[in-house]
Structure formats: structure tokens, C-alpha cells
Length: 155
Image (cartoon, rainbow, N blue to C red; front, side, top):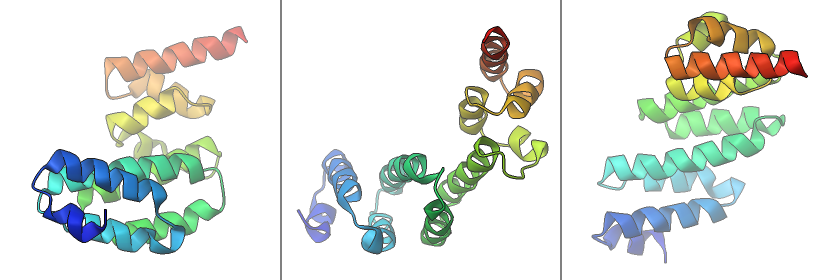
């Protein structure tokens, strides 16, 4: 099914599944164009949800590699008018910095979404985990971080 046909389908569930399929198969060279086209869907909540899943999948695959930097810049440009998507990309970059022990600021982590704090709390950076154990936004984040710290001290 091509994008024109997908957009013509009145069922947003069918469009969502078709977008996810197209995004899973897209080449690097066509990724920005496809994301831009998906984001033209009249159902913005659904379109952004499909793109978010794609961004999360790609970022998780790419974040430890040098290719992440260029990809993140391209995706930031493709999603610049979508604050939630742009924020998620910034948070993936912060997660990358924390995980790879690149420079990052504790205040950026403490100001980040629950998603990033919880993901980081279960991660590998002891400094970040300790910060979240003390000052994470929710009880769940603080508890996850404390559990991570306890497992580290037992190892």
C-alpha cells in the first residue's frame, strides 16, 4: 500500500498499522521524507504516535553508535514543529549522554519526563541513578533507582 492509499483510508487504526509497517521498512535516505508525509495525516495524535514509536525504535538501535548524532539532527529537523516529538529526541540525546558517560547536567535529567527518568533509573550510570533515587519526579522512579543502586552494591 502506498502513502496516498494509506491517507485515503478512513480507519485510523488501519492507517496507524500501515504507517508503522512503512516506517519499519524505510531506508535511511527516505526516512525524513516518510516521517514528514506521515505527519501530514489529519489525525495528528495517531500520526505522531506512529512517528514516536519509530523514533523510539530507531533511537534505541542507534544511540550507542556515532551514526546517532546525524540521525538525531535529521529527525529533529523533520519533527521541529511537533514539540512532543522534538522533546523525545532531546531526551534520547540526554539518555545517550548519561549512558555513554558523555557530558550532561543533573538539572536536565531532573527536568526530564517520567519516561526518561524511569528509563535512566534502570540504567547503568550510577551517578544518574543516585540523583534519581534522591530526587526523581515520582515514587516509582525513586524506588526503581534505589533498587538499581541496591543491586549494584550487592554485585
